[in-house]
Image 1 (cartoon, rainbow over the protein chains, first blue to last red):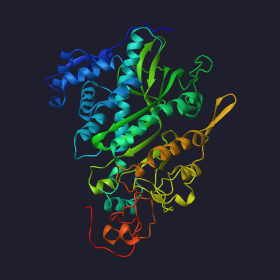
Image 2: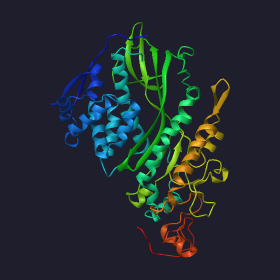
Image 3: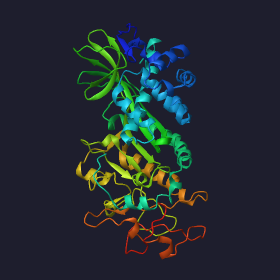
Image 4: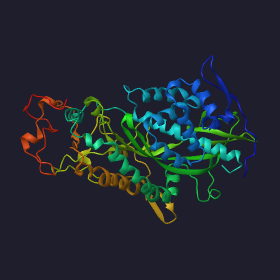
Amino acid sequence: MLYKIPFMSYPIKIGRKPNIITIQSSEAHHEMFTTDIERIKQFIAVSDYPDKINPNVILKINEQAVRLSRQDFTDYVEDLDYDEQTMMYLYEYTVDVGSRRRIGRILKKLIDPHQKCTEKELLDLMHWEGGNHSYYLTMTAIERGELV
Amino acid sequence: MNNGLNTNQIHENVYCNSDSYNGIYNKNLLMNKINRMKYFVETQYVYPNIQFYSKMLRININSVNPISQQYTVNGEIDRRGFKIVVNVQHFPRKNFIMFSVECNYFFNYHSNNEYTPGPRHHYINNNKCKCLLSLPNNIYTFEAEDVNVFHFTFHTPSNLTPREKSKGAFHLIIDSLIHGSIIPYRPFIVDPRRSVVPKQFITWDMFDGSMNSFFATNAGVYGINDISSFLLRFPQQLSFPNTPTQNIHYINDIIKPLYDKIVVDILNPIPTIPTTITRVPPAIEYVRTIRIVDCSNMLLYGLNNNHRDPSGNPQPGQRILHGGRRKTKKRRNL
């Protein structure tokens, strides 16, 4: 069965006033793993942590994200150094609209050397990041008319 | 996991000996071996047993032939795309390594409520999902959020303070057998009953009833969530068919061999590696009525018992783990 029903969409606001970017929900997965450096810079500019994210690192990671399978991307992420991994989490958090508040609290702990994440929190963070990439792969497969 | 023990002797022991077994928490030592195990687990314990997992996790779909066993219940139609992945994740500055087996799947859902496809989460029949598509006749396509089947965690607190290290632990958590808020677990602990050097971790079958009150961390819950006590208290079906002629028992055929493999291939060899200076503390019995013996009241293991490490060198003043009469008043390694 092929799914060719057009995507419904709703606007999503990212960032805080006065800097807000509006994206369409149907495009959210593309935005998170965009390989457009200017778009990456725009999202970083409205992030809560603009000085902690290097756009070139995000570009490098996203270029792998769009071509690797979920398992291969997980392995690739595992080989990143800690700062790059953290930038990736912070960037995905900026663009994500799924579970922002809880993930935001975990990320605050993650970047704070004086705070310790619980096992459950790190597990949630891992699932959230894996889920983002999995969602991207699924949506792009659907857009190509492939079976879910 | 509930924090059922306020403190125990191991907490104090790790605090006292916090520098002497840093080697076991060395990141590369564990990561290299755990990464090598990933492929083995996928090919031996995950992919060949996909039918078993589908039944055991009550997802009840057949990934090989999705047409023959469609799952339709509680508004869910045609669960499909069931897959299991093995992940290794490392949070270096949080001193934490996780080896997890996870699953997810897709399904259609008939509902008079309106769902808009997008990255927001929804709960369908208590499962966290994302809506992917809106189809005609009030049918929506969802992807279930990744769910942990079970995971091994290795807290690696080498660069933490002694007090923080006392919470360090290696353990298995069997997420899929959760009952209410209680998740069964089994710690990896060094056998306190054997005096051989180097110390050996307990394999699954050696973890008998006499070990139920022994802990390697204060994260356990006394008498409840070790897997043996847990299954006695909350019995559940653990054996499911994988093929028409083969039944698989979740604990005996999957969890136990993996647990033992980690013990034998990863944990037990660590103290024997010449480059590590590691003395693994045995688990300690939790006795509610006995006062915790603090560092200053512990015996110096090497000085009093004249024990030697495998290379023949006397062990430096590591404090023994059972407490005892006051033999030294001077704190070391603090």
